[in-house]
Length: 116
Image (cartoon, rainbow, N blue to C red; front, top):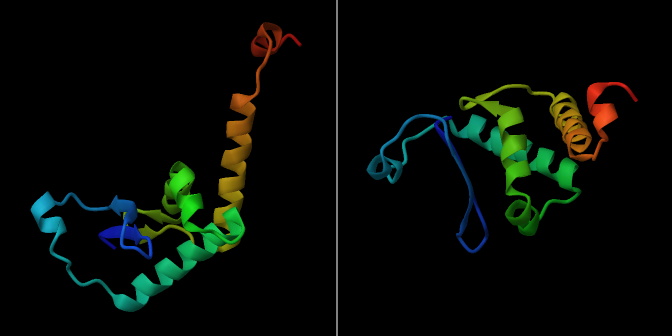
């Protein structure tokens, strides 16, 4: 895959990820990729979003765009499927969420130093 574009039903671009360096004028020219793999990637990405957000909708993408990009990055790397297992991708996302929660929780100076 060279890129991933996610549009709303109204045609507004909600998410874009380019995996190859492409000039702006060349981005307007769509080159063909393998359609079956592309459909499978789209289907799997939507399944991952559904599992994470619980019946994903456009507002989930709008207000949590950084999480949508993170899920996409966990699933695809450099335009190639990184992991075909939904469970392992969701587990990696869950672990990243736990790490982020730990970083966001306030800690005392003694806890920071490992003394408490």
